[in-house]
Length: 552
Picture (cartoon, rainbow, N blue to C red):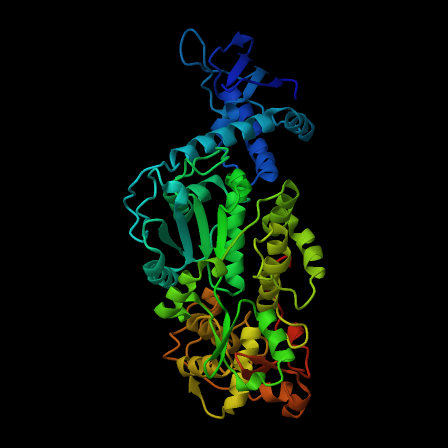
């Protein structure tokens, strides 16, 4: 690489090896000259390895273990560790020359088998660590306060047991109320906190630190890399997903299917191992008559085809917590109607799950979403649900809804949540200032806002912020401390202390005379905000648009 330095590289069998000379003296234990070269190689290889596999966490010392290095150097006034001169100790700054490996040399090193060797070693180590957290077929589990374990779990009757995974604690209390009908011998309940980790491209340390995943493994008694042909070895013979019937519930089901497909694909081949528990999302009543709908498109079709649908009273079951204990007992007494198994997975269906959850497939998801036809829904009268139907008819609805709520409309530059706020202010005919916390209550009531109060308060605050870098035109007025540029607006006062009102510009931009032309939407039997406003300025350009959806 220079008149004073000769360097050679080869791969080793898992331990660092070197042959080196300093001024023709054989340094059999290496030294600073060998370290100088190996550090450069390791730094370059880490970048190449991260590019190839972001999930692999590899340190320079671990890469060096796969190197075999030859160094022949001419060094000014070398110093050694002793009379035998086995190790060069001179600091690199005093070598008298700076050996720098060329880009061409680095490329040749990358083309060798070292990257694959390091990745295989990292995978082997990760598998070893994951194996340490494996579950086992034990009759009693300790340390999981929220688990209501089945009496027969981990016993010789474990195959008959079903673990119900619920979306949150309130759904767990619904499932526990339902256990009064089916008993606790063969049914256990465990609540999930929010959404499961997408394990497909997660780093090894993320998976190890994820309590949810470790708990599911322990409760189910699952073992890493094990091929399951039947359910005699796990603690439970069946896994039931019980989520809200909304789009996020579909996403949680998808994430759980993705987790099983990534780590335990053989479980998908076992008939009726994975089942979902469906509950109504809308219930309509008229006198003693009652109808349940399991999907919104199904309910919308019923409204269109029923002339006297206005005479029926509709109740929207946003979460499982909306159902009463009596409802829970009714659901569990008609188990066969509410429990639908997933079909066994065919090999050609696995790429579909990869399409939905792989970070590398964002462009493919765009094409997938372009083929979506409005009115698509998954028929819950099926004997079993094929994974193809789940991805293309149920999960696709979440992905569409995710884009609609996360990415502003080109028409008015607003997301649905923001549009509800503006519409609510117009409807209330706000002339004077109002406390943000009060406005939250009004919009939840009148605009059928289906998410939490905290996120609605954050939306109102974001619409009113006017520091440099927030809004060029703030549609609401920031009367109080609404945050600063220094903290990105996060240092605003609590919603119960700050006030807002409609900015004088807002009604000029969204002119009242345009209102009769707007297409109003109905939600929860309420006439709510329009599909979009028609501002006289393109707000999407004035305030900018950002948001992360699915595929975009």
